[in-house]
Amino acid sequence: MPSSSEDNSPKITKLNPYTGEAIPGQTELISTSGLRYWPLTRKNILPFITELHYSLVVGEIGIWLFGIAATLWTVDCFVGFYLTLPPPKKKSPATVSVNSTNLPNHQRSFWQRWQIAWKIKWRGSNQRRNFDLHRAGGLWTWAMLLVFAWSSVYLNMLGPVYTPIMKQLSELTDFNDYPIADLPEPQYAPAMDFRDAYPIAKQLMHEQAKQKGFTVLAEQKFLYDPLKGLYLYWAVTDRDVSASAGSSLLWLDAESGAFVALYLPTGEKTGDTITNWLGALHMARIGGLPYQMLVCFMGLMVATLSVTGVYLWLKKQQAVFLKHKG
Image 1 (cartoon, one colour):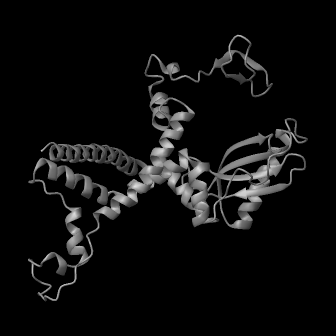
Image 2 (cartoon, rainbow, N blue to C red):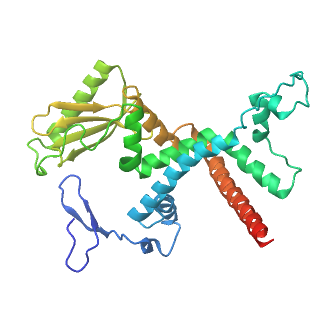
Protein backbone atom coordinates (compact mmCIF):
# COMPACT_ATOMS: atom_id res chain seq x y z
CA MET A 1 0.00 0.00 0.00
CA PRO A 2 1.42 3.49 -0.82
CA SER A 3 2.87 5.36 2.13
CA SER A 4 1.08 8.41 3.49
CA SER A 5 2.64 11.87 3.38
CA GLU A 6 2.90 11.89 7.18
CA ASP A 7 4.55 8.51 7.62
CA ASN A 8 6.88 6.87 5.11
CA SER A 9 6.77 3.48 6.87
CA PRO A 10 5.44 0.63 4.70
CA LYS A 11 1.98 -0.67 5.53
CA ILE A 12 -0.02 -3.89 5.30
CA THR A 13 -3.71 -3.64 4.50
CA LYS A 14 -5.97 -6.67 4.99
CA LEU A 15 -8.60 -7.14 2.29
CA ASN A 16 -11.91 -8.93 2.18
CA PRO A 17 -11.15 -12.09 0.12
CA TYR A 18 -14.55 -11.98 -1.57
CA THR A 19 -14.94 -8.27 -2.41
CA GLY A 20 -11.34 -7.04 -2.40
CA GLU A 21 -12.32 -4.11 -0.18
CA ALA A 22 -10.08 -2.96 2.68
CA ILE A 23 -11.21 -4.18 6.08
CA PRO A 24 -11.66 -1.16 8.39
CA GLY A 25 -9.14 -0.97 11.19
CA GLN A 26 -6.91 -3.68 9.66
CA THR A 27 -4.12 -1.47 8.28
CA GLU A 28 -0.82 -2.04 10.10
CA LEU A 29 2.38 -0.02 9.96
CA ILE A 30 5.56 -2.04 9.36
CA SER A 31 8.47 -0.55 11.25
CA THR A 32 11.90 -1.26 9.74
CA SER A 33 13.61 -0.59 13.08
CA GLY A 34 14.49 -3.20 15.65
CA LEU A 35 12.69 -0.97 18.18
CA ARG A 36 9.37 -2.33 16.87
CA TYR A 37 9.93 -5.32 19.16
CA TRP A 38 10.21 -3.14 22.24
CA PRO A 39 8.96 -3.91 24.79
CA LEU A 40 9.40 -7.65 24.38
CA THR A 41 6.29 -9.63 25.23
CA ARG A 42 5.14 -13.21 24.92
CA LYS A 43 3.52 -12.24 21.62
CA ASN A 44 6.62 -10.86 19.90
CA ILE A 45 9.48 -12.72 21.60
CA LEU A 46 9.56 -15.54 19.00
CA PRO A 47 9.48 -13.21 15.95
CA PHE A 48 12.27 -11.21 17.64
CA ILE A 49 14.41 -14.33 18.19
CA THR A 50 13.78 -15.44 14.59
CA GLU A 51 14.89 -12.11 13.15
CA LEU A 52 17.82 -11.95 15.57
CA HIS A 53 18.88 -15.36 14.27
CA TYR A 54 19.08 -14.39 10.61
CA SER A 55 19.71 -10.61 10.59
CA LEU A 56 20.60 -9.43 14.13
CA VAL A 57 17.42 -7.32 13.87
CA VAL A 58 19.33 -4.77 11.76
CA GLY A 59 17.92 -5.72 8.36
CA GLU A 60 20.08 -6.06 5.27
CA ILE A 61 23.31 -5.24 7.09
CA GLY A 62 22.77 -8.12 9.51
CA ILE A 63 21.96 -10.52 6.67
CA TRP A 64 25.24 -9.61 4.97
CA LEU A 65 27.21 -9.93 8.22
CA PHE A 66 25.78 -13.38 8.85
CA GLY A 67 26.37 -14.32 5.22
CA ILE A 68 30.03 -13.37 5.46
CA ALA A 69 30.34 -15.23 8.77
CA ALA A 70 28.70 -18.32 7.22
CA THR A 71 31.10 -18.22 4.26
CA LEU A 72 34.09 -18.02 6.62
CA TRP A 73 32.56 -20.80 8.73
CA THR A 74 32.33 -23.05 5.67
CA VAL A 75 35.98 -22.42 4.81
CA ASP A 76 36.90 -22.98 8.46
CA CYS A 77 35.20 -26.40 8.38
CA PHE A 78 37.72 -27.59 5.79
CA VAL A 79 40.69 -25.80 7.38
CA GLY A 80 39.84 -27.22 10.81
CA PHE A 81 39.42 -30.72 9.41
CA TYR A 82 42.81 -30.48 7.67
CA LEU A 83 44.50 -29.34 10.88
CA THR A 84 43.35 -32.49 12.69
CA LEU A 85 45.09 -34.76 10.17
CA PRO A 86 48.39 -36.29 11.33
CA PRO A 87 51.58 -35.18 9.59
CA PRO A 88 53.04 -37.50 6.93
CA LYS A 89 55.16 -40.36 8.18
CA LYS A 90 58.90 -39.84 8.05
CA LYS A 91 60.89 -42.49 6.28
CA SER A 92 62.90 -44.75 8.58
CA PRO A 93 64.91 -47.89 7.88
CA ALA A 94 63.89 -49.35 11.24
CA THR A 95 61.41 -52.23 11.26
CA VAL A 96 59.16 -52.98 14.20
CA SER A 97 56.19 -55.32 14.48
CA VAL A 98 52.97 -53.56 13.52
CA ASN A 99 51.25 -55.29 16.45
CA SER A 100 53.36 -53.47 18.97
CA THR A 101 51.51 -50.98 21.15
CA ASN A 102 54.65 -48.88 21.53
CA LEU A 103 55.37 -48.16 17.90
CA PRO A 104 57.31 -44.95 17.22
CA ASN A 105 55.15 -42.30 15.53
CA HIS A 106 56.74 -42.70 12.09
CA GLN A 107 55.83 -46.41 12.01
CA ARG A 108 52.18 -46.09 12.97
CA SER A 109 49.39 -46.32 10.40
CA PHE A 110 47.41 -43.25 9.39
CA TRP A 111 44.50 -44.19 11.67
CA GLN A 112 46.79 -44.98 14.60
CA ARG A 113 48.24 -41.49 14.33
CA TRP A 114 44.85 -39.78 13.70
CA GLN A 115 42.73 -41.53 16.32
CA ILE A 116 44.11 -39.35 19.11
CA ALA A 117 42.35 -36.38 17.48
CA TRP A 118 38.99 -38.09 18.06
CA LYS A 119 39.53 -38.58 21.79
CA ILE A 120 39.19 -36.32 24.83
CA LYS A 121 41.68 -36.63 27.68
CA TRP A 122 39.36 -35.79 30.56
CA ARG A 123 42.09 -36.19 33.19
CA GLY A 124 44.44 -33.79 31.46
CA SER A 125 45.01 -30.13 32.28
CA ASN A 126 42.28 -27.57 31.77
CA GLN A 127 43.97 -26.37 28.59
CA ARG A 128 44.30 -29.94 27.28
CA ARG A 129 40.62 -30.67 27.94
CA ASN A 130 39.58 -27.52 26.09
CA PHE A 131 41.90 -28.40 23.22
CA ASP A 132 40.52 -31.94 22.98
CA LEU A 133 36.92 -30.71 23.24
CA HIS A 134 37.56 -28.29 20.42
CA ARG A 135 39.34 -30.78 18.16
CA ALA A 136 37.36 -33.95 18.87
CA GLY A 137 34.04 -32.11 19.13
CA GLY A 138 34.60 -30.59 15.72
CA LEU A 139 35.52 -33.95 14.20
CA TRP A 140 32.57 -35.91 15.57
CA THR A 141 30.08 -33.29 14.42
CA TRP A 142 31.95 -32.17 11.29
CA ALA A 143 29.35 -33.29 8.74
CA MET A 144 26.51 -31.48 10.51
CA LEU A 145 28.66 -28.39 11.07
CA LEU A 146 29.29 -28.25 7.32
CA VAL A 147 25.56 -28.68 6.61
CA PHE A 148 24.65 -25.74 8.83
CA ALA A 149 27.53 -23.58 7.59
CA TRP A 150 26.84 -24.09 3.87
CA SER A 151 23.06 -23.89 4.29
CA SER A 152 23.60 -20.56 6.06
CA VAL A 153 25.47 -19.34 3.01
CA TYR A 154 22.51 -20.51 0.89
CA LEU A 155 20.05 -18.59 3.06
CA ASN A 156 22.07 -15.37 3.42
CA MET A 157 24.41 -15.20 0.40
CA LEU A 158 22.38 -16.95 -2.30
CA GLY A 159 23.31 -14.69 -5.20
CA PRO A 160 26.88 -13.55 -4.40
CA VAL A 161 28.34 -16.85 -3.14
CA TYR A 162 26.09 -19.92 -3.08
CA THR A 163 24.68 -19.93 -6.61
CA PRO A 164 27.99 -19.25 -8.47
CA ILE A 165 29.80 -21.99 -6.55
CA MET A 166 27.02 -24.56 -6.84
CA LYS A 167 26.69 -23.89 -10.57
CA GLN A 168 30.34 -24.86 -10.96
CA LEU A 169 29.75 -28.13 -9.11
CA SER A 170 26.31 -29.18 -10.37
CA GLU A 171 23.26 -28.15 -12.36
CA LEU A 172 21.21 -25.61 -10.38
CA THR A 173 18.11 -23.57 -11.18
CA ASP A 174 18.79 -19.82 -11.04
CA PHE A 175 15.47 -18.11 -10.36
CA ASN A 176 16.69 -14.66 -11.43
CA ASP A 177 15.75 -15.29 -15.05
CA TYR A 178 13.81 -18.51 -14.66
CA PRO A 179 11.59 -19.52 -16.31
CA ILE A 180 11.67 -16.25 -18.30
CA ALA A 181 13.24 -12.84 -17.88
CA ASP A 182 11.24 -9.99 -16.36
CA LEU A 183 8.96 -8.04 -18.69
CA PRO A 184 10.06 -4.56 -19.84
CA GLU A 185 7.14 -3.18 -17.79
CA PRO A 186 5.19 -4.97 -15.02
CA GLN A 187 1.83 -6.28 -16.15
CA TYR A 188 -0.56 -5.64 -13.27
CA ALA A 189 -3.78 -6.50 -15.11
CA PRO A 190 -3.47 -9.97 -16.69
CA ALA A 191 -5.89 -10.98 -19.43
CA MET A 192 -6.84 -14.07 -17.41
CA ASP A 193 -8.11 -13.52 -13.88
CA PHE A 194 -7.49 -15.76 -10.84
CA ARG A 195 -10.80 -17.63 -11.13
CA ASP A 196 -10.04 -18.70 -14.70
CA ALA A 197 -6.33 -19.37 -14.18
CA TYR A 198 -6.61 -21.49 -11.03
CA PRO A 199 -8.38 -24.57 -12.48
CA ILE A 200 -6.03 -24.48 -15.49
CA ALA A 201 -2.99 -24.43 -13.19
CA LYS A 202 -4.39 -27.31 -11.18
CA GLN A 203 -5.01 -29.36 -14.32
CA LEU A 204 -1.55 -28.60 -15.72
CA MET A 205 0.09 -29.73 -12.46
CA HIS A 206 -1.75 -33.05 -12.56
CA GLU A 207 -0.77 -33.51 -16.22
CA GLN A 208 2.88 -32.88 -15.35
CA ALA A 209 2.61 -35.32 -12.43
CA LYS A 210 1.36 -38.03 -14.75
CA GLN A 211 4.02 -37.26 -17.35
CA LYS A 212 6.99 -37.08 -14.93
CA GLY A 213 5.82 -39.74 -12.49
CA PHE A 214 5.28 -37.82 -9.27
CA THR A 215 2.26 -37.49 -6.99
CA VAL A 216 0.52 -34.27 -5.95
CA LEU A 217 -0.24 -34.52 -2.23
CA ALA A 218 -1.75 -31.10 -1.49
CA GLU A 219 -2.10 -27.61 -2.87
CA GLN A 220 0.12 -24.94 -1.35
CA LYS A 221 -0.59 -21.51 -2.84
CA PHE A 222 -1.47 -19.69 -6.05
CA LEU A 223 -0.35 -16.19 -6.98
CA TYR A 224 0.38 -13.84 -9.85
CA ASP A 225 3.80 -12.37 -10.70
CA PRO A 226 3.33 -9.06 -12.55
CA LEU A 227 7.07 -8.77 -13.24
CA LYS A 228 6.96 -11.82 -15.51
CA GLY A 229 3.27 -11.92 -16.41
CA LEU A 230 2.96 -15.46 -15.06
CA TYR A 231 0.77 -17.30 -12.58
CA LEU A 232 2.58 -19.49 -10.03
CA TYR A 233 1.01 -22.63 -8.60
CA TRP A 234 2.72 -24.30 -5.63
CA ALA A 235 1.91 -27.80 -4.48
CA VAL A 236 3.23 -30.38 -2.05
CA THR A 237 4.38 -33.45 -3.98
CA ASP A 238 6.35 -36.59 -3.24
CA ARG A 239 9.34 -34.81 -4.77
CA ASP A 240 9.40 -32.38 -1.83
CA VAL A 241 11.90 -33.06 0.95
CA SER A 242 9.36 -31.96 3.54
CA ALA A 243 5.57 -32.09 3.35
CA SER A 244 5.37 -29.05 5.65
CA ALA A 245 6.69 -26.68 2.98
CA GLY A 246 5.87 -27.58 -0.61
CA SER A 247 8.39 -26.35 -3.17
CA SER A 248 7.02 -27.98 -6.32
CA LEU A 249 6.13 -25.08 -8.60
CA LEU A 250 4.39 -24.65 -11.94
CA TRP A 251 4.25 -21.50 -14.07
CA LEU A 252 1.56 -20.71 -16.64
CA ASP A 253 1.14 -17.77 -18.97
CA ALA A 254 -1.31 -15.17 -17.64
CA GLU A 255 -2.44 -14.27 -21.15
CA SER A 256 -3.09 -17.66 -22.70
CA GLY A 257 -3.04 -20.09 -19.77
CA ALA A 258 -0.34 -22.10 -21.52
CA PHE A 259 2.15 -24.19 -19.55
CA VAL A 260 5.49 -22.40 -19.18
CA ALA A 261 7.71 -24.39 -16.81
CA LEU A 262 7.83 -26.79 -13.87
CA TYR A 263 10.24 -26.85 -10.94
CA LEU A 264 10.66 -29.99 -8.86
CA PRO A 265 12.80 -29.70 -5.72
CA THR A 266 14.37 -33.14 -6.06
CA GLY A 267 14.99 -35.74 -8.75
CA GLU A 268 15.67 -33.32 -11.61
CA LYS A 269 18.84 -31.29 -11.04
CA THR A 270 21.51 -32.34 -8.55
CA GLY A 271 22.06 -28.77 -7.35
CA ASP A 272 18.34 -28.30 -6.68
CA THR A 273 18.18 -31.56 -4.74
CA ILE A 274 21.16 -30.58 -2.58
CA THR A 275 19.76 -27.09 -2.01
CA ASN A 276 16.35 -28.32 -0.91
CA TRP A 277 17.88 -30.88 1.44
CA LEU A 278 20.13 -28.20 2.93
CA GLY A 279 17.14 -25.95 3.55
CA ALA A 280 15.10 -28.74 5.15
CA LEU A 281 18.00 -29.82 7.36
CA HIS A 282 18.73 -26.25 8.45
CA MET A 283 15.07 -25.56 9.29
CA ALA A 284 14.56 -29.00 10.93
CA ARG A 285 11.63 -29.71 8.63
CA ILE A 286 12.36 -33.43 8.52
CA GLY A 287 12.91 -36.19 11.05
CA GLY A 288 10.39 -34.95 13.61
CA LEU A 289 11.36 -34.56 17.27
CA PRO A 290 14.53 -36.75 17.11
CA TYR A 291 16.09 -34.52 14.45
CA GLN A 292 14.93 -31.37 16.24
CA MET A 293 16.76 -32.62 19.33
CA LEU A 294 19.85 -33.21 17.19
CA VAL A 295 19.63 -29.62 15.91
CA CYS A 296 19.34 -28.41 19.50
CA PHE A 297 22.44 -30.45 20.39
CA MET A 298 24.29 -28.94 17.42
CA GLY A 299 23.46 -25.47 18.70
CA LEU A 300 25.12 -26.38 21.99
CA MET A 301 28.10 -27.85 20.12
CA VAL A 302 28.58 -24.68 18.08
CA ALA A 303 28.57 -22.68 21.31
CA THR A 304 31.07 -25.13 22.88
CA LEU A 305 33.41 -24.95 19.89
CA SER A 306 33.21 -21.16 19.90
CA VAL A 307 34.00 -20.87 23.62
CA THR A 308 36.85 -23.39 23.53
CA GLY A 309 38.23 -21.78 20.38
CA VAL A 310 38.33 -18.34 22.00
CA TYR A 311 39.86 -19.86 25.15
CA LEU A 312 42.66 -21.55 23.20
CA TRP A 313 43.32 -18.37 21.21
CA LEU A 314 43.60 -16.32 24.42
CA LYS A 315 45.97 -18.89 25.92
CA LYS A 316 48.12 -18.74 22.81
CA GLN A 317 48.20 -14.94 22.90
CA GLN A 318 49.08 -15.05 26.57
CA ALA A 319 51.98 -17.40 25.85
CA VAL A 320 53.25 -15.14 23.06
CA PHE A 321 53.00 -12.09 25.35
CA LEU A 322 54.92 -13.81 28.16
CA LYS A 323 57.59 -14.99 25.70
CA HIS A 324 58.19 -11.47 24.39
CA LYS A 325 58.04 -10.06 27.90
CA GLY A 326 60.61 -12.57 29.13
